Amino acid sequence: MPTPLSRRPLFCRPLPRPASGRAAWTAFLVAAALTWGSGASAAGWSAARCGREPQAPSVDGSSVAHYNASIDRVAAYEKAARAYSACVNQQASADQTAISNDARARMSAINAAASTVQRRIAGNFNALSAELHSAGQKLGAKP
Image (cartoon, rainbow, N blue to C red; front, top):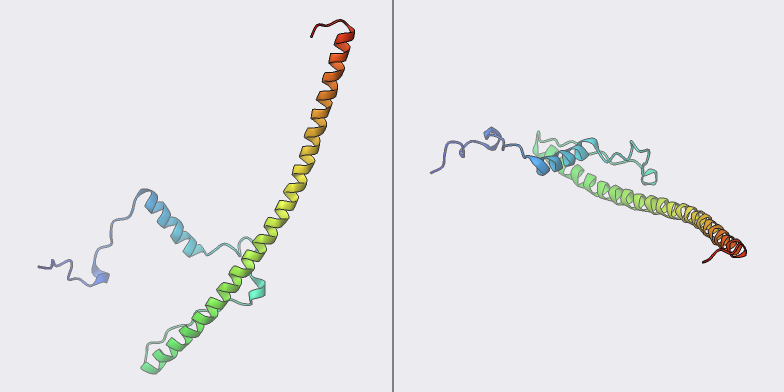
């Protein structure tokens, strides 16, 4: 037999208890990402080559004709949004690859310079060790 609570409409049912611990933190991060967006504009990046982002249409359910027109607008938006999203992903990937290649080249130059310094210092120590050994032998030091 159904309880009175289960017979209530969904919007009248009590909300589930909030999650705790890691699940709550994950839910917060997901909600924050969805609420605040990707942050790309805050970082100064945009997909300039993709044109303007398509705007989501409004749905008008005041009549069958308006509803049908809304379905057509939503379908057109879906097509445009998918194309825009694909373009953004392609441009983001290309920009990330360029940044990665630039960083790799810069790091290579830094590594080469650091290796040169390390080899020079190692050479200095080898030369100093040889000079100390030679000088010590001249002075009669025992190995």
